[in-house]
Image: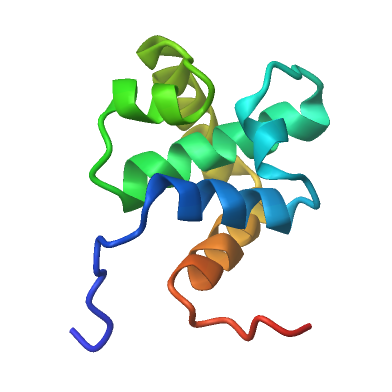
Amino acid sequence: DLLPRQRTLSTMQVIETVALYFNLDAPALIGQDRSRSVSTPRQIAMYLLREETDASLPAIGDALGGRDHTTILYGCEKIADLMERDDAMRRQIISLRERLYGRASVSA
């Protein structure tokens, strides 16, 4: 086990990393915008928060602007399903995990 998954990521670290990756700002992910350009990254943030932190569904909902835990669950399931079928989505999630754990070069 060379790279232990240290679960020390904060919800804000995940939100900010996802926002930066999609050229958004954190308030956009937390806000009410329902356009696809914001809602898909928000669902990716939900998925990563659920997978990579110890945050509960209600805590993730609170971090993302007071969303209901059922909304968080739906978002996580949607991204998990897309990862099964969509190579581009799977690559995005892998890339984001690398950024979160500092294994990718930050400078482009």
